[in-house]
Image: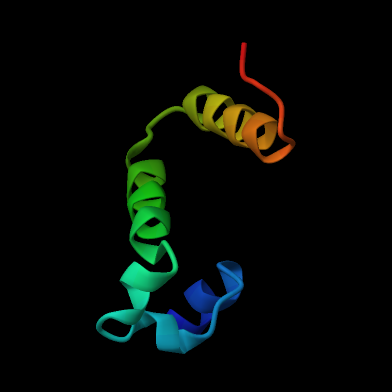
Length: 62
């Protein structure tokens, strides 16, 4: 399972070792995944995805 998570994050499994996670923002990624799992409605997930795509594209969210 750890290997699949690392692949999904485009990281090596080593990032899960103590200390490595804080160096590359993995804590934030894990928190985002935890929050994502708590979202009950597909409409909320779509809103988050749209927001993230806007930020990733370098545009300012309206």
